[in-house]
Image 1 (cartoon, protein in one colour):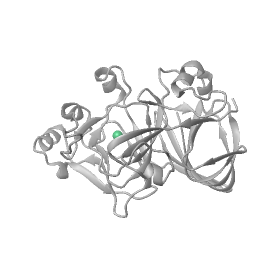
Image 2 (spheres, protein in one colour; image 1 turned 135 degrees about the vertical axis):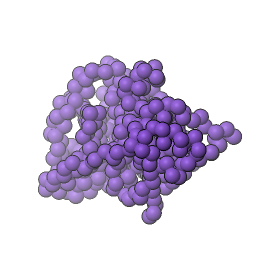
Image 3 (cartoon, helix red, strand yellow; image 1 turned 90 degrees about the vertical axis):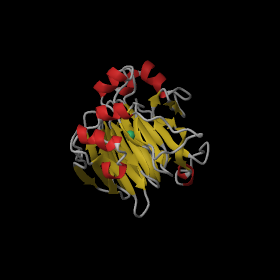
Image 4 (cartoon, helix red, strand yellow; image 1 turned 60 degrees about the horizontal axis):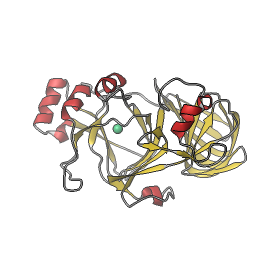
Length: 310
Ligand code: ZN
């Protein structure tokens, strides 16, 4: 099909959220602590609506159920990917996600969660938590019991344009001031290990210490990213990651470029600038899906975008 599926984002208020989804992306956000924009999602906790065209007003989950041909007749109960923008005005909890097998057995058949982050903005001396310093499970348990959080967590500097792959079992946290685009498996299973003893409506948010200990990989190992890059005239493309669940590419365009959609489907998020795709104007903050069979497409303008597909 040669019709672009533009999506209406779903917003989520969070105790750690801010207002940059309005100030930097121009969205009509619900309040001043909006933490997440679910930009391409068919998850039941935030199911995007098609903005215009043949399927205007339909949820993405409905399209997945009723027009699977748009997604290359892929198998599976759920649209497999979820693309979010995250505005961390404060630190997010230190957390970890299970893999498919653990989530299936312990979370009512849910999928596990592999996710990745492309950093859109962060403070000058920003940091991020990825990994931990325990050499094995015994040491991990001891450090958690003794609340030696600073020693346990692995904090590292972060810069605009950085990219991180967070495999299941990786301790991680987004820190204050970071704005990022997340591509992930369509899952909402998070185990909270430590929440800085914060209160939400007067109560601490629940922790999941035992499940966290079950799934945290010891010792931590970074997942390598950034496999290849190529230039085609005015278009510069980088493959940020290619794993079992998704491939994520970052594109930068200054002029005209051509790409081909030959996958079951292709998610596109415009993260800066503006331009035109096949005669249709697009700009920062727009997200869309190119369905199966879309084929070759022409882009022009001055913009950056992130593409994902299974
Ligand atoms: Zn996470």
